[in-house]
Image (tube, rainbow, N blue to C red):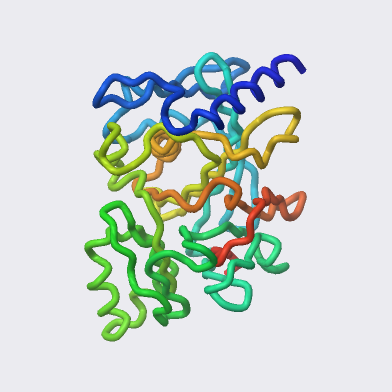
Length: 316
């Protein structure tokens, strides 16, 4: 109990000092931090901010750290345990790999995409996967939104705001913001090019490379703030990778506490799990995930906030 309470004390301090004052950083360098993973009965440090790679490539540092379980056909999921410097805090990372050729991914909202009423419990009994999608402003989704081939919202603007695009064949890709105008034109000339699309930010990886804005402070992204995180990426074989973090304390009683990796650390998690392209989705108290386990049925990691938009996978 004393170690758990110590971790809570660290969390409370971080909550007060989350503006970046908690870490002393050399100008131009990332705030000092390290990540360890629980593997083979011990903690092993696999990432340090002062040695953070600019590009991720095989072999992947976390490739053997997840104990994968079978979900519905086309879905597998598992968990890994991570810790900060000196085990000062711990996280669970829930990871899912989804084959979009076998799982149909579609956007969903409660009634309309302009009201923040959706949760993973809205996904329905046929859902084998569900998570909150994109970012939002107030009760409305932020950025480009296409559902069933129809555009509902125009693109948002920002250099690190790619769109998650699903075509009629089920292929999922992350498209950079400077290519979205061409895709909007394709809605008229090549209807199969875009079936579903939503935009989010910031990009974590592009072709395995970590964006420059995530490699040093002062480039438009807060690289010191810690929060619960949810990210979506694509693997080299076309599968979709999803990762959700949960604070690990008091035997799960602190699951919904909004504390977790920095943005650069989450980019490292996705790169070390094999993602080539990746983007953050809304995190904090919005982050939520459902995975249907092949043996035990639906597993839910709920959020505390209803959101405007969800991404739901159903069996093909």
